[in-house]
Length: 217
Length: 312
Image (tube, rainbow over all chains, first blue to last red; front, side, top):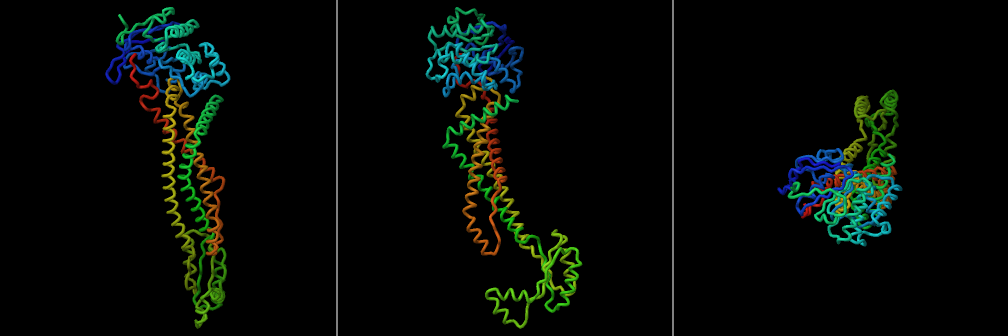
């Protein structure tokens, strides 16, 4: 599903975030990308939906060389991936329901089906009752679950979550971990960056440990 | 195709809701655009009226053929016969010297002067309407008639029409330049309003791009926003022009009456109004398009926020 081949990423400020990183992730696998702060986890995850581009090396996602994609093709790559951001990036001017609707709206999904799917996604993350709530009225854990609902509403084959459990207490963090694993159980490839792998101890997940931009020895 | 239509309908709806959601700024923008467009639009209406005046009064150019004062009725009859045979003359009428005298005697203040003269100072004359109003055939006809015996002078009566046409030509050029300037202003105004819209929706736009929105998806509602705002401005411009016309109609008719001109102010047609509205909407769309394109091409657009990220 994902293959990194000798990937280097250098930022304009000269910091080398990734150095000759190679790994691959099979379809249907759950992988934890672990490491301390600054190890390059987030950078590695950002290369997958072409939010950043590798300075050298190749990033292959579902058979596509992401680094060579034309600008116009990038939206279609991103629509096939579910993204969960560390700061969840919810829109606070609209309801939970409308937040989850966004990925379907922007791909021109037929409205009636879309509403059913949004409801299903909210049920899946346990927010079925809070559809009309505004994000600001939700707790931290609920906000993160809402972000996950938004990431899976279009049923992507690949779910990429960057530090989804930061800022959550241990119970809520484990709840999120269980939720993410439940997607692996239905065949979704799940990639999670975390600096706290203990949260995912109960998950059937492989670990890719990074240290200073390379695979840890 | 249905999907495409649905996306446009959706984008249009979002744009309309945003405009309706902030009525004050919408009205202000419409007023600014309306005033900018009203200037060239009003100029155009004025110009067309003047053009109509120019062509309405003269109809077509006429030649005044003055006979020599010593020519007698026999000469006049011979010339009349020649005119009848001249192909370049579509029609003509004879103005007898007595007639001219009578007419001018009725003019205030002239009667005494004319009465004091020993004899009728006016010649017999023909007013000839040429078959062909082109510059060359007019000159030719004039030369032909001037060469006839008994003809003293042939005058082309369209000189003032030509002068008016020349002036109006200059006015038209100036109006075009003004129109182009203000059209640019409209694009700039829209560019700026859309930039503010983009800044206001920054989070939504950046998130949408991360989730796989195409440039078109981002662009569409903003372009509709610009077009609708232009349309509103065009409507304001129409109202301003029609209002101004109403205000000057009575005094202008009175003025025309003083000059003995049968002049009625011509209103712009619904087609003119539609053209103005369409142009305003198109310019609004263009301004929005440019503004969104600029934003989409910004280097960091579509990437994660540039905030330092300690976990990198």
